[in-house]
Length: 65
Image 1 (tube, helix red, strand yellow):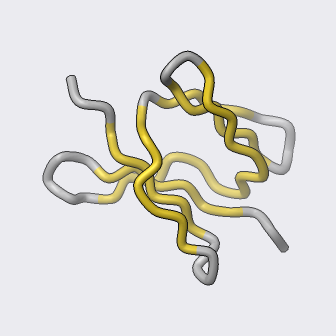
Image 2 (image 1 turned 180 degrees about the vertical axis):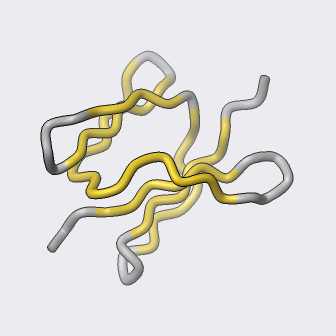
């Protein structure tokens, strides 16, 4: 399968699960829109930090407040 798990890393380095089974990530107006395998989506204010292809994981950095 090609789906990924998306986690958000906060300021203290903790990883927070954002959404699983992500198939598409679309940048939109300074945000990232995450679409999952089942037709759901979630929009997050974060930036791309790392893509771990072997782990099927995308790490985002939380937007600074």
